[in-house]
Structures are given as structure tokens and as C-alpha cells.
Image 1 (cartoon, rainbow, N blue to C red):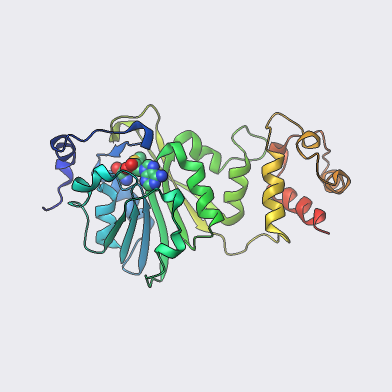
Image 2 (cartoon, rainbow, N blue to C red; image 1 turned 135 degrees about the vertical axis):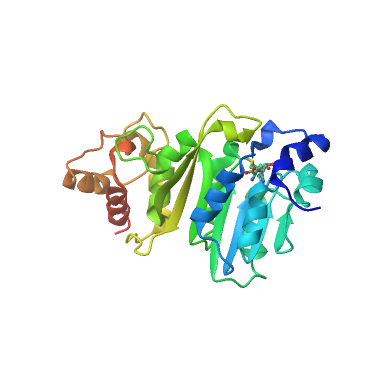
Length: 275
Ligand code: SAM
């Protein structure tokens, strides 16, 4: 059956589709928003796109038109009858939990020039998904995701603000982060309680000079372990004199909280600890 965006609502109703809150199922029902996201992402026939959570296939359909191939991970098998009507032959749906997959293995058979990740994310697992993309070193040069507005604000947060956290640092370590657009809660079915934002992450060319990435990541995670606590309390197992040396150089001391430190200061500390 030919895909018709206007009938998406009808299709979901005809199939008696039961929206599952536990999977963060809020589907976009406004074609302009979808077109806008795809247009701004510059997907072309040399692009392999990974989509997380295709839902009823609204975004998947347009991505399939523009991309070389699309691989989409959907946890809810009950979407199959609706979703498979809406996709193109260059699209493969993997009915599984994205968080449990070996993505590099899944994309091995594809030849592509560019790999993009594009998704309207299930909001209950936004951070685990982003951390998986980072930790698994999925070789995507661009990531475009729709997230809850409040979470999106954290991605670009500046040191010293309450939105600034370890995720901000990990993201800005690898990527240039940019807002693409705001999205009203009214374009979703069912309507969520929050507005959304679309953000893009583009791989940074010049990466910071971190000697030991593992140590850097651990230091950042530990520093933010208990947000209200000072560095002195959060970093008990570390060589505090080496940390203090760098803090003092930056006119800070161990009584500050992690949210005060810039990414560069964290790097300086990690490098000093690795000496
Ligand atoms: N892309 C669709 C759209 O924009 O209309 C649906 C987006 S909806 C916010 C999130 C989708 O992610 C749902 O279809 C949900 O079933 C799926 N999902 C939730 N958890 C998942 C997981 N762990 N792995 C893969 N898909 C998941």
C-alpha cells in the first residue's frame, strides 16, 4: 500500500494500535516537521542512516526516499503491520532493543560514504542511547535527534549552570552541538507533557588532546557523581594534590563543584593525573 502521511492517524486507529508509554511512544503527525528535519540533515544517496525508534514510519519513509540505505531499530514488534507499509526497499527494520545491539556488526555489510544517526528519540532512554553511540564509537559523522526540550538545553549548557553535567562534557568533547529547531508538543500523537527540540551533533575535526580517554571519562563521571558535593568529596580515591595543582592554576580549589569546571580544565586534570 502506498504511504500516505495523512492516513497515519487512521492507520494507527484501524490497527487498534495501543500506544505504549513505557516505550516513549509519541509519534509525529505533522509532515512539515518531518520534512524539515530531513532537509536540515542533508541526507543524500551516499548516506547510510541509522534510525532509532521508527514507530509508525513517518520519518523512516522520508529518510528512505533521500538516503542510500536506512537501518531502523524498533523495540515494539506490534508496530510491524503499520511500519512495513510505510518503508522503502532500501530500509531494513531490526525489531530489537537498540541498547542491546552490536551496531558496528549490524552496519558491516553496508558500503557508504557518510553515516548519520537520525531519530525522534524515546525520551525515557535519551542519555543511555547517546552514551551508547559515544561508548560504542559508532562512526557517525552527524547525529540529529529530537529530544525533550529540557534535555536538549543540557547539551549546550555552559559551566556554572544547573543544566551542565557529565553528558554535556562528553558530547562537547566529540561534537559541535547545534540547535536545529523547537518543536511544539502539539505535533505528536498522543500529545506529550513537554515540548521538544531537534539538535545536531557534528563530529569535531580537531579533538582535544586527552592522554588517557578512559581516565578522563571516569574523572568526569566521578566528579558529577553527587552533584551537590564538592570535588574533594566526590574524588576521594584520586591523587588530590595533582588535582589541586591544576585547580589552583585556574584560580579554583577542591571546594568547588564539578559544574564549575570547563571541559578544558577537566582535560588538564586528567592529563596531570596520568603523569
Ligand atoms: N520515529 C517515530 C516518530 O517520530 O513518529 C516514533 C518516535 S517515538 C518518540 C520513539 C520510538 O522508539 C517508539 O516507536 C518506541 O517503540 C521506540 N523505542 C523505544 N525504546 C526503544 C529501544 N530501546 N530500542 C528501539 N526502539 C525503541
